Structure formats: C-alpha cells, structure tokens
Amino acid sequence: MESQAVSVLYGFVSGPVFLSASFSWFIAQLLKTIIDIARRYSRTSSDVVSTMFWKTGGMPSSHSALVTSLATSIGFGHGLATPLFTLSLFYGILIIRDALGVRRSAGVQAQALNRLSRELHDRLGTDFQPVKEVSGHTPSEVVVGAGLGFFIALAFSVL
Image (cartoon, rainbow, N blue to C red; front, side, top):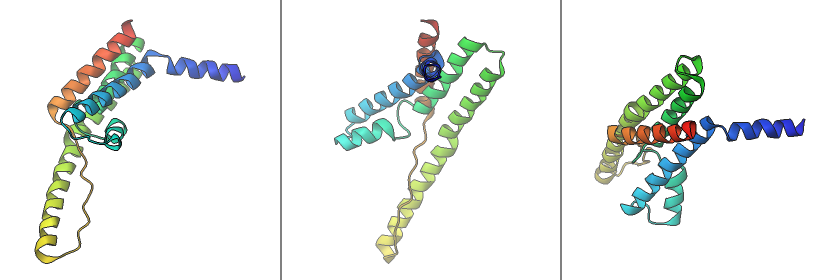
C-alpha cells in the first residue's frame, strides 16, 4: 500500500505537466530575481529571497509562464479537444487577464491612495497607514512569461 502511494506520487511529480509548470514558475521567478539584482532593486539577501518566492509583477510574468506551460503541456499530453485542455486554457486566460487588468489597476489605485494619504498626513497631520500596493503586469511582461512557459512545456512534452 505504501509503495503504491509512493509510486503515484512519483508519477505525479515526474510527469510533464507538473515538471513544465513548476519549472516555468521557477525559471520566471529566477529571471525576475536576476533582473531585480541587475537593476539594484534587490540589495540584501532578504530582498533576493523575497523576490524569488513572493514578489508579484515584474519581468517576466511567472503567472503567465505557469498557466501557459500548464495549458501547453496538457494540450500535448491529452489533446486539444479534451475538457482538461479547455479547462486549463480558460483558467490561464482568467489568470493572465487578472494579472494584466485587475491587479495592475488595483496597484495603480493603491499608489495614488498612498500618495494622497501621505500628502494629507504631511499637511494636516492625519493618521497614515499605507495600503498594500499590489503589482500587476505590463503586456510585455505577460508576453515574455507566456513565451517562456510555452517553450518550457514544449521541451518537457516533446523531449
């Protein structure tokens, strides 16, 4: 019974869908971290770890890389005319749309709100608690992430 569970777990983590999705996310986050270090946004080891595992937004989009890789590897492995591929495709579209639109808009609004609140604090001495500024993605970040995810899934599915 135990060896059967281990076998199922091994099959899950060694399959092209899992491998391509997890590698796409990891490579996108690694590239984002390297770009942040080169731009000097990440200066301390804490900044580097935070960027690698928690930061959203930035080049390339790990959201786009992961969901594109997921849909691509499912399409290669199970076919394009399957409900599983359709589910992964629309899930990916939803995630990418959210990263481009909703989260980006919320981040821009949070920045404006924080700027206004700081100004009120400076002028009138009001209490100021900044709101979290969520980073969405630009279209180029999404395109690069999607391309990265597609080619990683292609490699895991074909090789």
